[in-house]
Image 1: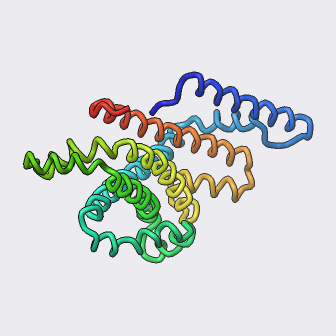
Image 2 (image 1 turned 45 degrees about the vertical axis):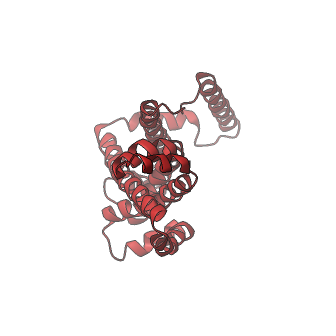
Amino acid sequence: MFLSWKLRLYRIASTCFWLIIWQILGSLFKIETTPATVFQELIKLATFETLNIVLYTCCLVVLGFLISFLLGLIFAYIAYKSTLFRVLIDPIVAFCRSTPIVVIIMGLLLYFSPVNVGAVIIIITVAPIIYLNTFSSLENMNKELDEIADVFGASIFTRIFRVHLPQIVPSLFASSNIGIGFAFKSAVTAQVISLTAGSIGEQIYLAKLYIDSNLLFAWLVIILAVGSFLQFLVSFIFSKVAHNYKIG
């Protein structure tokens, strides 16, 4: 589930290559924003205030993601067991997947506070991803294992944790890895539109308002770093789960 060290080095080298190209072009054409100026802005942002802003957004993302993960998992299992429930929930899932995020955020602002909009939009965008991937994995499970569980009279909890869960862990990892990225992007988008006080989204809006491209790119670097850390965290957790179930 983790990238090899060689692939990581290749990615770092590739990133450094394009940063050098950007810096050279910036020097030749007198571009205001270059990696050097963005780095200087990052140094200025190295304060406790910035840390509080990042932690605030991260807590919102993690909370929204956990709720989305549980809802997607539970709904997928119910849909797997009940065709009626699946038919009833399909239009909602289709709506959440098809409607542009910006439109949903604008609609939510009519009924929720800016803080709550960030959490709700994460659930709306991430839960369907978890739900669809989990449901697909459940449908493709080895049915013979279920039959063996019937023969031995296994309880519902034994089926879930000893028969079903080990088979869907790889799919859960893939959907969670995508979902945490969507959660972070959706939360920041909601914060930009709703101007949530003390958030990363508010800082991005202010950078755009003051036409400060260096500050904007500095916050972009922070977003990329935090997003990568959250994805690493998901990978680490699922690697432990996979190890416990001897998967992969």
